Each structure stands twice: as C-alpha cells, then as structure tokens.
Image 1 (spheres, rainbow, N blue to C red):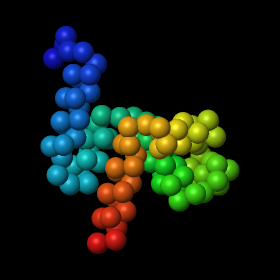
Image 2: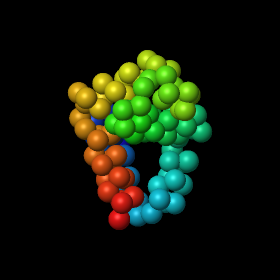
Image 3: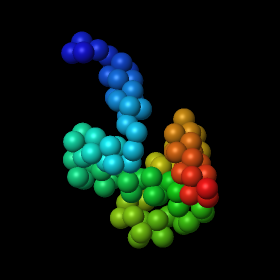
Length: 99
C-alpha cells in the first residue's frame, strides 16, 4: 500500500466506506479517521449544500453553519459544476426521509 498513488489510496478509502453497513459503523469509522474539527467542517459543508439546494441565501447559511462565505461559494460551485457528489447524497437522503 505504501507506494500507491493518491488515486489508488482514495479508491481504497472509498471501498472502505462501502463496507460500512450502519450509520453507527460509519460514525465510528469517521471518528477514528478524522479529527473533530474535520468532521465538523464536513458536516457543515453538507448542511450548506442542502441549504443552497433549498435556495437559502449565503448570509443565512453562514449564520446557521458558521462557514465563511468563501467556503459556501466553493460548495455552491461544486453543486453547480462539480462531479455531483453532493447532489447524489442529498437526493438519496431526501428520498430516504420521505419513505
């Protein structure tokens, strides 16, 4: 594993996530993998993406999440021009909430 490329390591990490079967397992893995501040930042970004999809304004998102407007702008760029990672997750969470 030591001589793997960044892409190969990221793929290995993604496969690791896909082995998780419950939210509790995912939480435990994330808590082992990330610092508290990294988890807070990622959680805030996902909330910002949800709020952007619901047409909240930047100032409201900044107030509710504690994110800078620069970070909110980056999340918005990802929503509009990215690889649809946020979109897939948010759509699936929304569908799950309505079942």
